[in-house]
Length: 498
Ligand code: CLF
Ligand code: SF4
Image 1 (cartoon, rainbow, N blue to C red):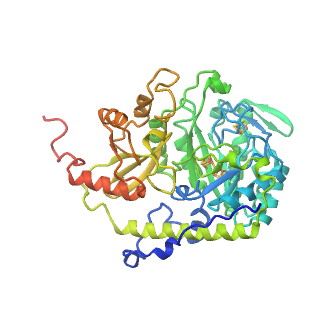
Image 2: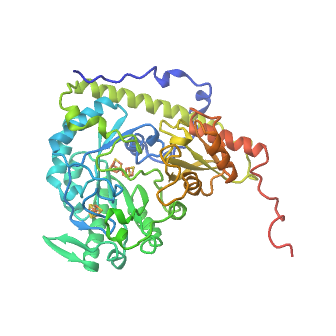
Image 3: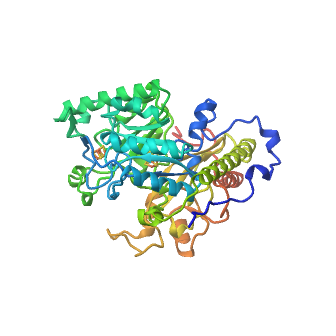
């Protein structure tokens, strides 16, 4: 059977916009407007490098890289590399040929799939034959798909030239520290020239290799994202320095990810009681680092075999037995991807133009910021029921605009027992995760959780179901500002009366 090629409806670009002509010269506000067109073209449909793109474009990973050349204290080799993924999941390792077959099948079925990444389950560059065999074949068979790789950096300098041969525009290096004394608390050993090198000495080599690899990639025009795992009490304060340093070197984006350290994962940190950062601690650190460079706030710590939109799991649809008998017209599939991609980009361009024309008219410099949580399944819409949401995107909205602060994960209200394993009620866990949030937008909110959220000072709102997030945020802010709910205290009304 031939794999159907998905056709979409009428082109968004053809749908017209009353405001568009007046706004064509308006600045774009997707956080990429400052970039030269050549860089913008590299990131506008990469779901990790562009926050806006992650609502619309998908990525997939192929788990072709089982070995690793270092040991991290947050890793248990039974699971995927936690420099990119979350521990607690394990991917089935594939051959490069199987990986290519799977990628082509997914790319034919999901035309929004723009990026193929190799991120584990070990380190891709500790498995160079398998990694490059996969890239080589894909560069030939699906040249429109961006290739992406994530590495701990130890072997990076050795492979930079090979990477650039396959027009790999996006490389992630996990850099957790610049100081080998801190590194010794994160990495017990590395493998260097066939020998294990322990402690500070090993960390020093790793740090030097990471920085050398970063310099080499920047010199070759590759976009580098730096991942850092935030480990409270070990590198959390130090990461501000890391952020400043990698920006000065020319890294494009910094992704500070929370440490996941659970005893059941069997990692050193998990077994030794190392605590994870809270959502607010993570957000605070990201804010502190953001003065130095662009921060990624929408990372999903994907599995090494993730398929679909970020946060979506479509692996089961593309197991090797399911794709074995598919008859795919690769040329037609590629043409369809290019068409769908152009259509989405045209729609986004139009949205940005409209967005930049309409300010927060009811708001002014006398109104404060508002934090809003949004339940979404993607496409930039408020299209998730409160009860099914396992995460919320938290935005900060103020008189001059809106920005994503991060993701807050929680158990879904409707997905099982009403209390979590530790006895805490699910609704309390959700309210706890939403600390600091004043409004919650979802496609629907049930009667009972509605009342609980209100009692906790969070105003649920289902009026913007299926509407674009950015528009709903703007409208909610304007409504609250008009109602005087966001007024800043008048000067002289706070502080010491004396
Ligand atoms: Fe994969 Fe990583 Fe490429 Fe993205 S994931 S190799 S840059 S295509 Fe993205 Fe997933 Fe976060 Fe990684 S959300 S874990 S940052
Ligand atoms: Fe584990 Fe990845 Fe660290 Fe290797 S680099 S030890 S796979 S977390």
